[in-house]
Image (cartoon, rainbow, N blue to C red; front, side, top):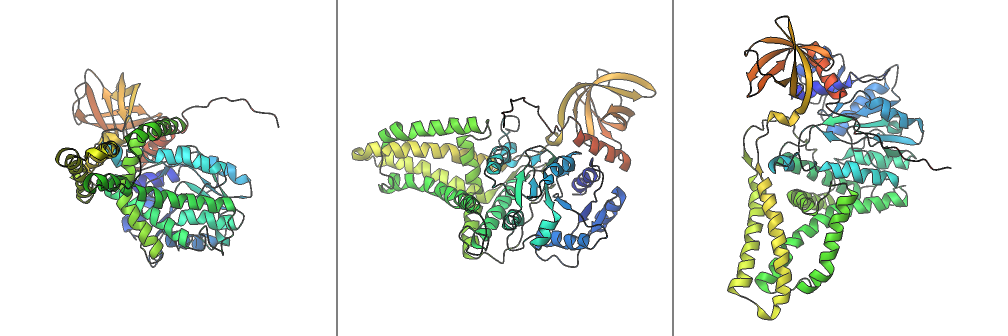
Length: 520
């Protein structure tokens, strides 16, 4: 926890911007965090109670800064695990020159793989689940002027926040609600699709599911509240209301149909009930071309960030929590506690998410037994055409459910999750002898080098990384070299963290593609 907060504070206090202040808002009232904030040169703020969770914490800070001699013009929110890159404020502030902009939202990128990537060992071949949302979906929302605040990695106009009374507290997703309340005041949210902050994705399935459940619950509270799409008190435009209806359908209808997708084949295979009036020929003639077209189209539009089966997998994993949130949020909008997504826990051991595995393991078993019952024990010859449809549907469900069950087995996370592979020459100094070796990988805390004559464990060296000489200790030997741990002094940690997030190890841009500009 301390290492995570330290990185964020160091990044926030090292921005390339001339006039800004940093506050650590601590609802835990931790003495060590107060000392850390003082040590790293930023302000520390706590409050007498924890009412309204995150929104209440931010609102308490807003009251504090509004009473200062120099009131801020803008505020930026960073979650405890999101480290800003040096140009974060400079780039985001450029869009605030337009007085109609109330929020500038930037995407969330992650330095570690999410649990789906980790448990499938697919980190190098499959993007994290949020990439489709931030790289494809949010730019499309922005094109229709319906982009919304996602909390962290955002910049907000202070005067607009004061007009709406600070962050709303009638939803556990206060960030989305901020956009709607500012819209009612004529201030819009714009999306800046540049990688300007790096955070931590949920590290386990439990945290992943908790996060999705909270997002869904918060939206249901919004849907039932005064800023909902059918509210007479709301001053939102038609497109904003339509966007809210679309979001409601993506939570309630999409996840709800996943349950029917499992149950419908069971109804026929076990009981002969035709819930869908079609047969295998119609499936091959109509649905299969659509499915293939849809899969290829989404893969093309999303540039490989969306694949049909993997989308189903991620939705099934979150479905129990999401559907529970839909029901509870619609039936009882208020009185729910904010559930924090835990980060930085011990992930060195294999762990099984038994509640989810039992649920989908049972669904997989029922599907297999239904197939065996219908096609081996009780073959219905007069309805074999429809049975072919149920069989094809069930086999697809078996593939998806098998992947979900496999993901429920949490794999241990290694340190390499936050390491970046490199292949570059590095100058090291050992016992006043300079020599050139190659660096294999690097992280904030250390690096690994390729060296035919590695120094002994415990040796002290200086290596030229991040554009400066960093003291390090040799902590292990490898098959082709050695690994080091960087010096633990505060000044060294500050320089290393800032250089790490500013350098090419975590690139802000993959490249620039030239395009012609049309005449006005």
